[in-house]
Length: 262
Image 1: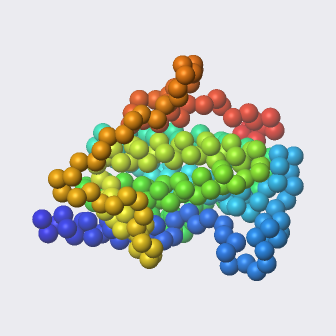
Image 2: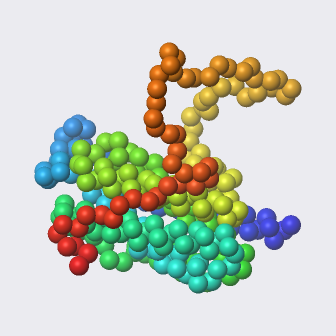
């Protein structure tokens, strides 16, 4: 029991570190002037629409994610400590190989310089995994990667919502599917410390909780009617293209009109 508690403390520390440092997104909060002026100052024109600083930031970070998560997946696949870890590793390799193709094409079209090596911090995470073994390795693999994906997930949504560039918007959509897929398979390993993730999320928060009041013991919430269209409206779409617990990531190969991929 003491060993399990010690492992939990280690993982909590890992998640907190990743939560504080992984995938920072461009912010204008510390800049002078109006929001509109700051946006204009960091934006350039392209044939696909304005390209902002936050757009460029996402492009670079999608590339950086692949530079460390792909070798992390390869390492885990070679070690294959369990079928669940092996499945997650497979998804990491496939997902980031695909995203890397897309981000290299888009970066070339938008003239955004990409890094070729992971950051020092990302190399440190890879080293931590390399030095671990057994159960400790599975926990490090699952939690370092799950925390990193959890931090980039809302950042992708922010850029997807705000970008005026069609290429960046498509990259954000593709990255969103891939990150959600990776979050899903990492959680299926059974090694993710959800308490540590939740604690990290609220560590710097002082706001009062929102939402309905907590249910009282023995109290049953009343049932509510279905929210649905009336009047015999005919529909053709379906809620999800994939079974529950999975994410549909299949999409056409990216168009490489400039032969960026060679």
